[in-house]
Length: 144
Image (tube, rainbow, N blue to C red; front, top):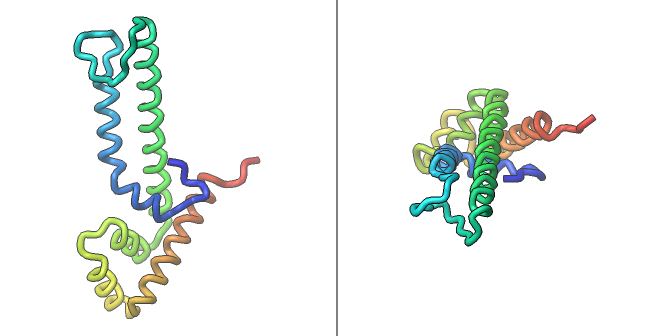
């Protein structure tokens, strides 16, 4: 999950699955048997005895790296959302974590804020740009 150049829409869409992905990876890591056995469900096959433990160890490291990347992405999202106003958070939730159809959300949000449909989408785009800039500034800023 390399988000640079930072694609905020893909980042938010991917965030919907991080919890399940992390749970699946943690289970896969837990299920790795580092000792060869008859019930090797790791998917790693080798005719050489010494290769199997090394391949399994490498797979374990790759899984751990994927889990750490998800944790970093979760931290990035939490940080950026903490910097938004309640209205901006509501827009992000309504568009990316909907509890109802987006059309209904846009109509209700527009009525409650006195905005037309086009202005609701414009406000969403402004909020997404703000999120993108917050994440880029904090996590991808210039290195000194």
